[in-house]
Amino acid sequence: MKRILNIFFALLFGAFAYVNVNDVDAFLWVAAYGAVAFLFALAVFGRADRRVSGVLCIALWVWAITMLPGMMHWIDADMPSITEEMQTTSPHIEAVREFLGLSIASLALVFLVFSTPRQARLL
Image (cartoon, rainbow, N blue to C red; front, side):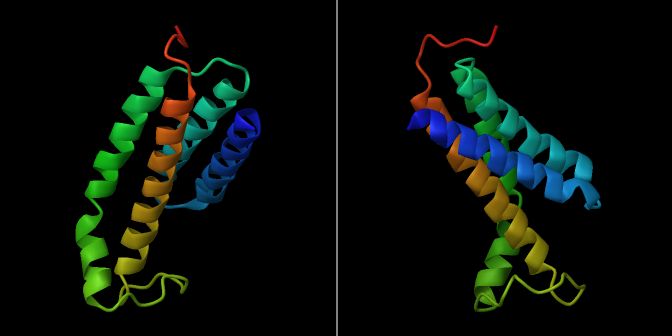
């Protein structure tokens, strides 16, 4: 079951990276989601490293925290839809989507850290 979840997350975050290829700041998002996908792909083959997964998890949470002002603005505005096209009149849409994406990636990495044996080492 754990192997199936690792395959699922590797494919999911690979798809997230692919979707962000045309983004204005594609380098950041493709690198972030690609790294998560890569770590899950390593886990599929028993090559996961808890240390690397943990460091990336912390880095993504720190990045997500920088999105909190946008999240608070969205909550204060009674949580309008974030499925619309992004416009200058709705700057919260990007902040909320980015916060949620980083949170999903971080939570997936928490799963990876706790499902990887302590002795597993990449290097």
